Image (tube, rainbow, N blue to C red; front, side, top):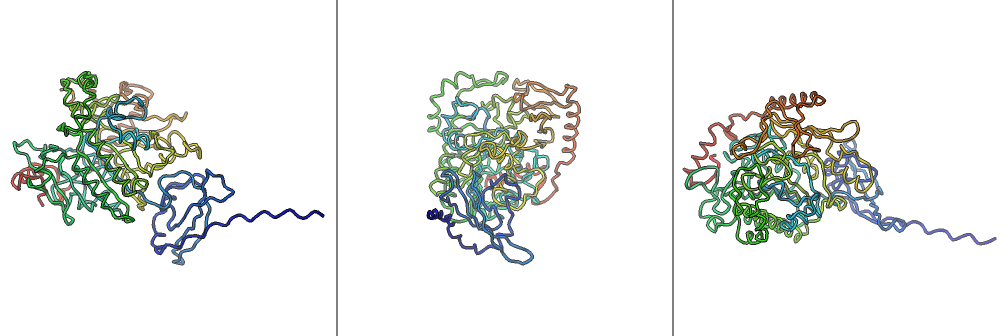
Length: 607
């Protein structure tokens, strides 16, 4: 008989598993991120994916060259036996957020009064801002994920409180003054990430409490801080714009030994008239370049004061905008209903400030690359409110701007970049609706924090994961999932947006307002709707808010319940107590300004 055929070689055995981590039990007690967002198929979220996991990637000979297989050793802690048990798993490695087994460095850049029009939107490939803002265009749009439905409050202070506290302004602060600070019972984003072993640093405009040291950055979760306390200052002299004196107080502080210390006029930054954007960029570079290799992950909150008024910039940035001088002088950028005269020099100064911020972002990213941190970084860019039409910064095609409740005041430019973003989502646009308070829950989730205790803050990763699955074809999520799911965004005690899907599957977003949509703008020639009885817009199909649907009989029931929702939110407003560490607004502002004048003429806490 013929000889038997040669037997096939045995399949290659996987490489030996890595050794057990020494802190197995401690890590096993941590939150399992995968449990929060159930995986589809074999897709998994990034790092800390199981309570105690060590893994590596290998590609057996019989697997397609474009595929990857992970051999994973999983450690599970049993509270009954108080021991770790092991099992080996083989999983396919599909694209995901971040690298397997890692938590991202987080750099959150918050700018001040950036106009919706002044942005190289992915939907406008001919935008001149792609050339004017090359770093934003490359790292945050072409290589990042644009977030097209990001909402904030209509002016600075409440938006910053929401970002740090995870509370909507209704449950925090709705004034634009400097007292009080974030409620002391609230854990800030800095507190939350520092508890997750992040090194936390603040740079820039604080604007979240200055009356006492209990409200300043070093007491609210940040290991170091440098910046200004109030919501406005001269970019060269550092004199605050919140008072009207002939010689306003200096507004500059830095943390020393865990306490935020106010600077005086002998500070080199003030003596040299260093420009604020340059100072904040340089400090951000120092934080990144001095971050210990292999240490805890980094959280940097970089809050630029640009392009907030006064409209100022260094000559080098003016020169870089000179090629657009004909555009400035044409006044074609000016809103026709804006009664303020066209001022080309102010418009050029505004765009020069944008160029300064773009330059700063490029330098920060280069510092991250120099430390080999960029591939493990989640870089976020957003604004605290829309552009101010009074500052030559319209929000076309959106109506209105800062201080108003039209989309131009509360919907802002936002994008994410860094190696943490999957390559399949780079250059894409997420239509998920989110509020600035949602970053508290979203970033805490990315950092592996067990739970964010805030009813106001939602985790946006499910929406972004749904978009990722759609792009790579591993699932067919609904349009509602990609838009962030059914929810009600509470913008203020006057405005809410309800997002849901019709029976046909079409997603709609109805916005109701029970207050004037652009208070104070009538003096500038703007046409405003009073809306005290309720205005209703479907902002997905009518983003310019041309059609008030309040009189549509088919929507009367929806309008009734949305108005009722607003009334319930008003009833749940947060009331600040007369706490010596966090005083209420009444009387505090006047006393505080007098204290600054009497003490070195510098902005500082009075206790």
